[in-house]
Length: 479
Image (cartoon, rainbow, N blue to C red):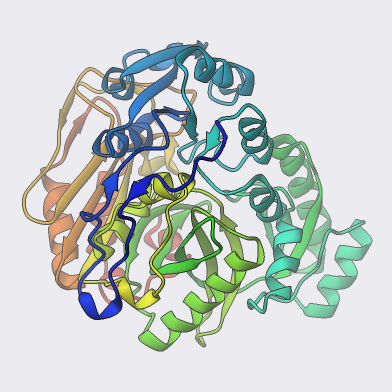
């Protein structure tokens, strides 16, 4: 469907003098550009998007594989279409089937969630060719940030700090020479990578050749490209990311930071906002750097610019995720706004506030990812049937989940069962609420990460804000 202008009437934003609190969107009278949104994802994020669409008065279409026929998002949508058998390449990653589902249901927009098509530039491009609005950034932005070597060069050109390193390496011999020049430890990374795949840390030249071979093979298997680049390893860093929003008019704002250092195998387990180690001055520097980076690629949607923060307070660009993040609720909680609704509004042509100062942040939020994994056995995925499921509640607790008693966790997809988000006026109150909620949470039938979270949140390093990316290893879980 061609662009038809602003989807709101009386689309006036209050001037800075009119308000001091968080953004109030109640003055928008919604006239949707989109009549029907297809959600090209599954699980809790599909349900999250359906809820946002319903609040905006939009019809929804759920797509699902045969393994997800009893998933909650299927029943909650206005329409649903089975797109194939369980394997992802035959269902959730199958672009022709998803576009066919959009065509037969007359969906005029597609939200990719944070799933396999969310950062697929080809999919975003094809949607536009078919007259369907892709609720996300442009294909060009996705492509630039998806190629990690190009992303690094782009950020460097925009004045965003990057760690010493290279572009695409032509050979092992080149990697060997660069590693000698910048000094060990170094990290090999897949150019098309993400989620820790195709990545190896190398502490000495004797380890480099084997690491090169392993990273290249893993990258080829995961991304059909074995291209690698190399960076100086930041030892025991903090992982801090900045949430950004950009609109189609070229305006970019940031919504503060999220601390994501508690992770295993480069997959996050606990996130919080604000970071316990980021002060106002650092927040401003990181926010300005993130905005520069987003402007450099003409970014328009919700996105995240990720940094590694070293012990001296210097930060370096890691990557940009050109999609909504799993951990977006912690930002929503402290900023009192709905990021998914903003994604939809921006795709429809809405403008962001003209001033960064209009966004207000209060309190502290912590998110725990509750996965069907066994933390006592190196977080081994544990699919199976949920025999009992009870969600906690009470002040300051939010649960995002697609799970219910009798639900079968399929082995083909990620193991996320629920996200528990706790809010408090202070970090200590947020921690206390999350611990209380974890103790109330009942999930039986499969092992979960709840025992890990209880251990982690009560550990002295976490409570005092000293946890780094080595925290899970320090706890003895083999992160």
